[in-house]
Image (cartoon, rainbow, N blue to C red; front, side, top):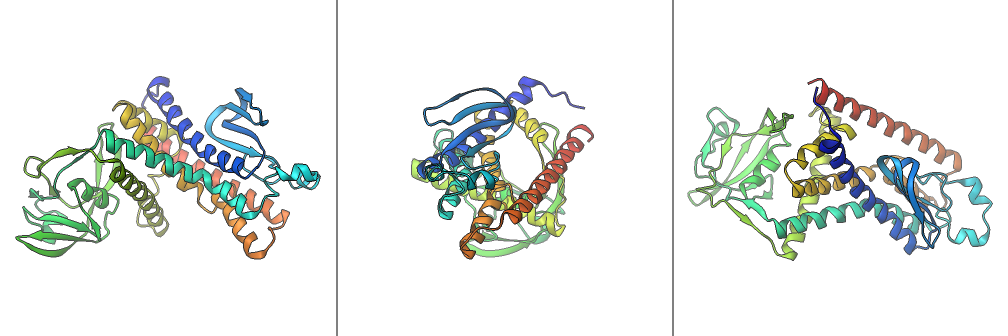
Length: 373
């Protein structure tokens, strides 16, 4: 059983999570203020308040004892999940309604809700952009230097010297781009476009599922096809991007994380992939500690990846999450009036149950993979 130290694992985890949560809630907060919604509280963490201050607008900024999330509580909310307080809203004066979230137009409420995930995506794009400009990316030409015998690539007809142009329609600029597409697609046939002796042709290959153990001892099942790249022969180098190019690459990186996450979830649903890769706070803490040993830049990069994941998760159409609120607002926009109080209450209870089950499942995966492997 691995030992988990405060400074080695917990502190990096809290640092990363606090930054990501803060920017998520800041998105909600700024757009709420822009729409003249009164904000009662801006909290990083849940539970009893550890320390805080109240600003001139009456907002209580606070850090709480359980640092596993956060919330912004608007005027008219019953709690930090933006559950409407219908009784309190009905008793508000005309002046109080002007600053009440529940009394804002449906478009304004939707803008406030979607601002949290959007802030997460923007944070990730900024981090990735800075990384591409300051640190650059190691790259080498996507040239096959060797083909592993009896591999998926050898069966598909790959040869030494092939130049990889595209994988399933995605243009390949560096050899590392190939693994990024192949790894999350075990046992799914891919079309790979190559250039051989001046002739462009397509090869069909099905990556084989293989367990790979990283430097920290974590084992993951990935797709492999069995081709190698020799940086000495493929012009291995570090390339730094200009501002415009870096932003474009950062947007692409953010979309890559989103699309692969959605692909993995789809594969879980159809039974193509096991659900044991879903992780919760324990696994995130472990990964944060491991990444922290690689340096500050690697930890910041992890923050960007986690920011994308949290932004995407919050857009899922589950009541309690931002996406669930957006579904309610879409129904309200179509009907011309909001769902009834009872329907919303039932929806939030169902959402709470779904989120709780997901957390329990992810935590069990964490315990199983970290402590009993």
